[in-house]
Length: 58
Image 1 (cartoon, rainbow, N blue to C red):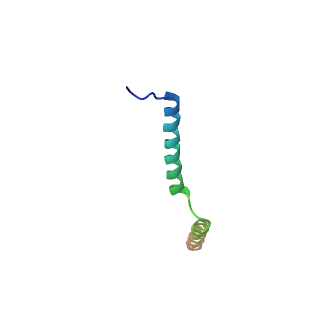
Image 2: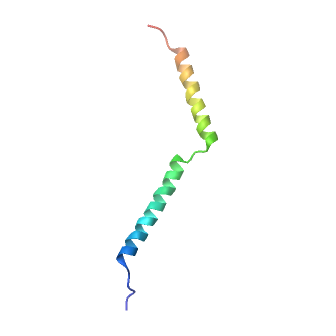
């Protein structure tokens, strides 16, 4: 005889595992340390200043 499965519990378990995998993917994409964020911001500012310095007046 087959095992009885609560369909509501199975649906909730599946949603939980999908949410966990999505959270893991988001941590990889957006999970930068403060030092990395500061370094990226400093690099953007440096490039912006460099661009402004090389801009010609019309």
